[in-house]
Amino acid sequence: MESRKSRANNRKVETSSGKNTKMRWSWDELRFYEIENDEVYRARLEGFATFYQSFYQDERSYSLDPALEFEIFDYPIVYFRAMSSGH
Image (cartoon, rainbow, N blue to C red):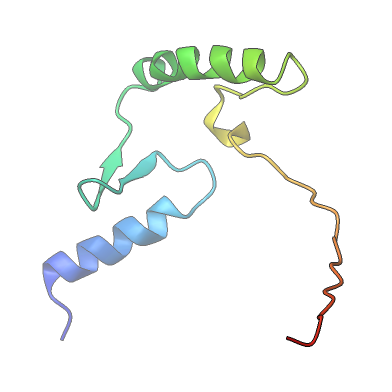
């Protein structure tokens, strides 16, 4: 039988994976946190967004809108050919 705490944790996992979720995972503490103040959360990331844009020389930017906080990396397929000398 599933405990109340277990059901609550399952609900958090379901909520954390949805679009526009306000749940964030802390790897250090192994727990979820819910964003309570969007303005404070956005302000916390402004320095990172500025650094990110500067690092990529204005070719890329990091959105402060949580719904747009993702990046798609398109890596080309690279084939390697190994040669053996028979040793």
